[in-house]
Amino acid sequence: RVQLVESGGGSVQSGGSLTLSCTASGDTYSTYCMVWFRQIPGKEREGVASLDSDGNIIYANSVKGRFTISRDNAKNTLYLQMNNLKPEDSAMYYCAADATGFCTSSPTPPPAEWYDNWGQGTQVSVSP
Image (cartoon, rainbow, N blue to C red; front, side, top):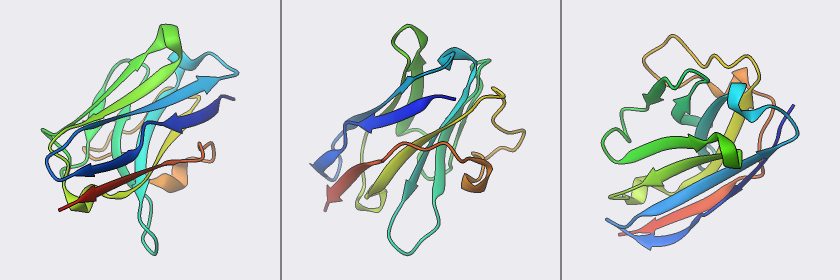
């Protein structure tokens, strides 16, 4: 079971960019399904992008063409490059991991309730 630590959040203006990182430790990271989620207070945690152990990637429709998920297995790190940020992207961002390596067969990222292994989150704030 990996331990997850997110970083890279911050405050930017609309149209700006940020790159989030999720560093994993404690297990064979490269075999995991990795997922980025985000959550604003009072709302459910929303899947943003997933990347399975075979390299299959799924994005939420709201971020397609703007966000890029990637991983560096040598560094045990998952990334989320976020470009052309919008105020509605403001949220706490979390990464999650699943040891099966499989994320989902759906065209959308997997739901948060499938995961019980979370990092502490990193805050992203986008001003108009």
